[in-house]
Image (tube, rainbow, N blue to C red; front, side, top):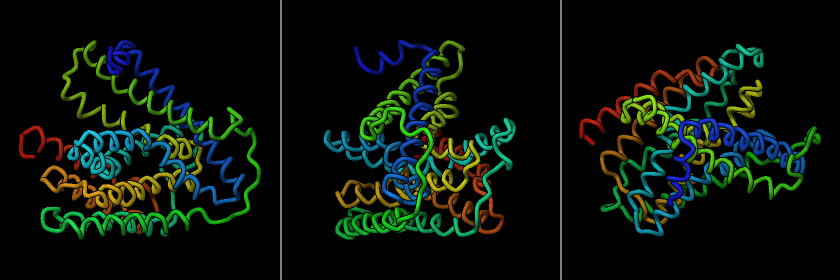
Length: 324
């Protein structure tokens, strides 16, 4: 019996199981952020930006690695391209929904994250590196593409070193549930990977039970199920009104998806620029630039959500009509 069928056996209940596991993982990682920040006296926002995205993206890294080992290079590159695209189109609506819900529940003073204008700087820094990829066709610029991949990796290392700067941090209350940081990290990764599988399988089964069109279900709901596990730590911080840590985690995801992962793929020569990949990258860049302008002008994070949703619908429509 395959793993997929095991997850599907939970039926619609899989949605609840998935939500519980993903949330549990988010709480474990949030505790780890506080613990690591105190243990090594590093800026909490920096640990949230570097450590949390690496853990929550572990399932995607596994897909990328397995695809390469199996020789499925287009699948490997597709898993990389999907990340900045989803982060630019789906994540902002989820952010707004989370913060508004927290405001209604009395957990926040503001309905949406309020940030300083300088947040626009790292957003720019991790959006612009995607642009040259659109022109580095591997069949023409293979060597240059590999060199650019190495450059992206160097950029991420510099960013990580800056974010993980020393800072005096007080010992967190409560500590780690599992007492051991390595054990808690392992359990968090296992929980988020398993939870994501249950979420997707449960949503599919729920659609079958309710008689919902599978295509509509895949387009509307499943992407949200895949984004929430990746962003759970930032969403938990934002729900609690800790905007600096929450937004740092979101920006950390953009850094990871805009430099580290494409850098690894390009350095290995694993990238293509078919229309599907190019359009996903282009839409991610456009929406991100709009978000940057909004942050710089108004100081709010996530207000590009309507544009992101339109971009996502546009991409899906192109796919369903066979254009890409």
